[in-house]
Length: 316
Image (tube, rainbow, N blue to C red):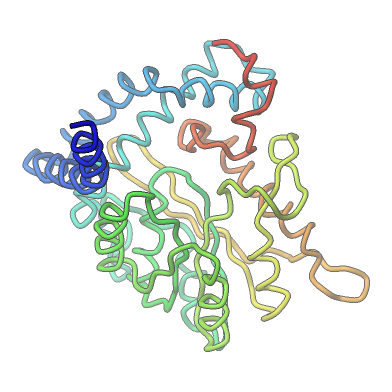
């Protein structure tokens, strides 16, 4: 009998990822029956209610305290609540992205989405060589590759798939229909990106993900490891690097910003300084986050401190 129960339990554990993916998909399809603005505002309120009940809320407040020691507890709590709301909105925006992304390069300024840096998009499009665009987990960063497609850019996007394989397939299918070529983040992904650059195409990467090994840098004055992949690709292909971000605006509107190419730090012999370049990426992300702190994903363990003694002793 015990053996039978163990087998049933094992089968249920195997089935749970599939069932969870089906439940999420069903919830999103039901959400799609609602008007977009109503649904986005509703999911914002739901996320603000659910978020503080999650274990990650404590990590979020800890990250905020270290990043903004000058702010009061009330100010940091407001940022945390805004961040939960932003995450909820992003989940709902997957459903409505076809409706929300209404930017037309031929008729700019007439829709819900506005674009800052249109001449730079055209500059990248007309480049006769490889390029890199980087962003961070700010607002709905998924809109950036969609905008690249709208301008006819040939960009391969590096992304981290969900741990649930069924949800990963679902998300990949959704993204691929709207964002062009995608490369899942794994051990061989750097070779796929290198091939794209070698062929004269572009690469899009997120640079604010947790990384246990890498370049020694700081973010908000706190030591952190940063993935050196982008800097190494620049060193290999000597290509321009453009920062890009999404900003949420009032009324469920969005602004996509493409900034001029960075001046890449170099050593005395002219080689790319990998550590200094990684730090420059962090400085850019920090500038963005300081401007709109409630639009960044504070709940993720960017500083890899979840098991540190300091965090264990932190109380809300």
